Image (cartoon, rainbow, N blue to C red):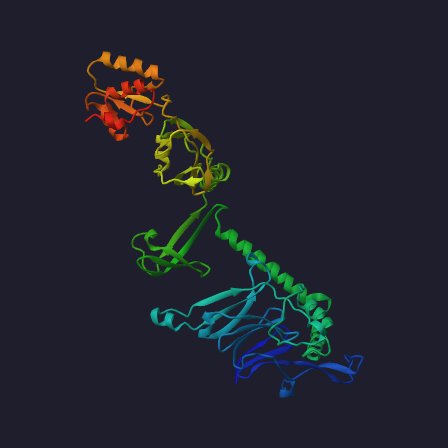
Length: 510
């Protein structure tokens, strides 16, 4: 059963899609005769079929199709390519000179069945003379839900390229050809392909005879090729004229659209050249119904484009500065205050650039300590110091800080400290609270100077003892927050009398 037929432009070949595959029938052949058209080997070109003679089955040439049931075929404009569609949904592109499968198209949408094929010249704006075709698909689910025609899917392809068989003998199937050479048109293509054919390859004799036949039928002087070039040129001119007539200027486009479908969210508009455009229905004027004609003006705002480009460039520059040039800096620490059993470590404000602080850790003599450290960058840059206690008297230690960030881990410089001996009271720093009189406070300040210690008016992390007669006032509350021992003035006198640091537990203020 014949499902579809195709005839080339020169009416020299007929192609038939049947349930058994694809068949080609040449309408002209060389026969022995004695006319003026006789060739050197005693043959002349004659037509087959017609009213006087039928074309017999031995003249039909079968294509090596992988599928038996071919439902549709279509020829390219110059007859060099043949497109076929089989019932399972496979679409193949054939070279008519060599009957070689150039490309196979497989898509899940094609599985529903192909009913029709059509080839056409690609418009200039899509790349010039390229082979393309449309595939009509059965879409039962679409037809049942919407009373519209089956959806059409359009697929475009670049020019196909033919190759000769390697090694003189074809060892694979006709559907596994590779693409290597690029030829200008079908005439040069068939000539080059015929020159590369090997007599031992399949279909070589048939392809050679076809090329000889088509060369004899082609008009002299390259008129067929010139006609194709003229048609392509005229199509390009028509496309340009069509674009100019639809455009008011190079910035503004105006067009009338017919409303083909309308729902709550989206409307389908039909253009003057029968193209469908999805358009938000909320932007349509009030009162628009199915079949209404609306005018839509689309303009190009070059000023807004330039502003957006400038903003984008500035953003890129800022990203480069913030994330590409600035890197987090390692923390710098120093010794703030040292006593017999503890020390204060201070650091410069942390500079993390665009990174985030993950954690801070204190290391003593290479060992990580379970020391409470600031958990955020704001806290770390506000306190700028940490007090570590539990040290041995008159002992040397090395400290450093580990800073973990989103950009990596950095270590600070290492500092070495030595705790004071009991006789060294230079690390003692006292602050005075509520006493009997101001004169008593002045006498205690003189005692502090004599033993080599220091005093301050503000309670801070560096204060070692808070001396007072009464537990009252803001200074006493601050000392409690910093966990500073609050002692009586007798402690200071005992340190001077013994010449060394005295335990504060005996002089705690109750």
